[in-house]
Length: 122
Image (tube, rainbow, N blue to C red; front, side):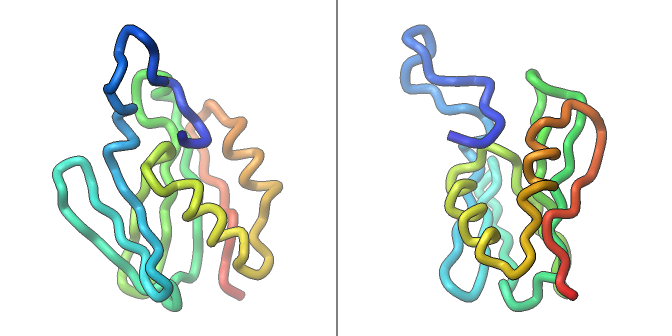
């Protein structure tokens, strides 16, 4: 279950997944790969990441109100909060030197349109 979870499994919707959990993110050691709602895959090399931003918005609880933006020399990888594999992704990011958990906490508490830089390559 993601950091911001609203659509939880219940007895009424038993077996239905949260919409964001249909998006997948995976670390394989050298790359991060995402698979979106439509099955389209994107990936970037971990070594090319230069900044990680958490973007929040005021669309919750009906919309996806948290997005991870992973900026690399090859583009941007976007991952919604609540994606399958998000917890593992966060655990890997928290191993990056100087990952800013304070900014992570602020982002997870935000209900406004904002950006939080949680890691930047120096």
